Each structure stands twice: as C-alpha cells, then as structure tokens.
Image (cartoon, rainbow, N blue to C red):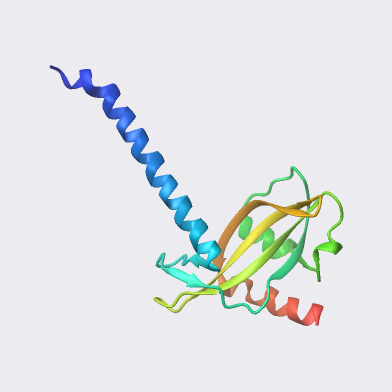
Amino acid sequence: MDLTYYLPVIVILIFIAVIVVAGISIAKERQREKRGESACIYCKADAPRISQHTYLFLLPIFFGDTYEDAQNYLLSNMKPIRGTEQIPTGMRACYVEVYLCPRCDKKHVAVKDFLRVRGENHIQRIYRFPYEAFRPLLDGWDMTIN
C-alpha cells in the first residue's frame, strides 16, 4: 500500500498530539499560577513571585479595544491607581507582578490586562516582559501611591 493511504490517519494523529501537548502546557501554567509562580521568560524554570504587593494600573482603553506592540503601549499608557474601585465602568486596567528565577537569577514581570465586570476581573491577556523595562514605572507606582 501507498503512504498516501495512511495520510489521513497520520494527519489526525499529529493533530491529536498537538492538542495533548497544548493541554499539558496549559495545565502546567495553571499549576504555576496556583503556586504563585510564573515560567521564567529566559530559561523556562518556575520563578516565584517576589513583589510584596500587586501593582495596579489603569489603561486608557475600553471593553473591545486592542493595541499593538504591547510592551511599548503599556509602558507609555499605564497610570497607577490604588484599587479596583478607581476603575471607571468599561475601562480596562492591569495588574503587574514581579518574579525572580532561582535558576538564572533574572527578574521578569507578568502584566495581566483585565476588564472589571460586575465586581469580577476578566483577564483579557497576560504578558511577560523583562523587569528592567518596567522598573521605573513600578518605582514610580510606589512613590505615587504612598
């Protein structure tokens, strides 16, 4: 028999393998979040959260809006706020948490862009960036809020 005879079976098996690998990846990420960890952006090891508190920023975008070049957009548009009660209806905000990898000893931030609906935060996207780019903004948050 010809290899093309088995082609549909091969394609289906590859598709199933991709779904299984994606499912395992999602499950690992959820386990990390439950433990207060994030995957290191440099070496992929489990990095524990080191920030004493979660930084909260208001974003000048509404429900369905999108933006390109997330790092530059966030760095130039995030405005520090004290709490979720300061988020106007329909506007989005983001949490920033700092993580330190024990394997490579580098820091990174996780930025969780969310929309607050009926008292619940609905995560739109989660971004991970190098800490150094966000350091001035986080230091400024401490100065502005305290």
